[in-house]
Length: 137
Image (tube, rainbow, N blue to C red):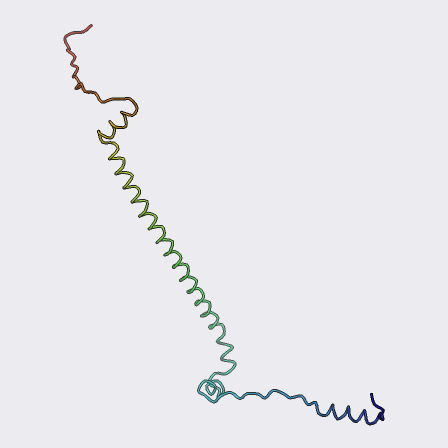
């Protein structure tokens, strides 16, 4: 600090305080278009706007329900598509398994499988057994 009188220091502080001026933000004026004129000129008053709020909330609620319902239905359609693909796949598996069973139950395939167990096909034709009714013991 330098050697100065108190009065000089106080005067400088007062000058510094005077220089500081708070600037208030300038309000932007709304553009003069149809929408602002529609709201300013009293076509819709604040009373009308507040009395319409329940209806607006109701419409917004219905919109949310509509969107939710749409999402649920799309999820159901996706699930139905997945299940129908799985059913088609299982149907193909059933048909191929059925064809394999029909092939494996043919006489030649059964004979091949029985031959590995040591069972052979009979070469003697079957004989018919007849019982005479006259002879009783």
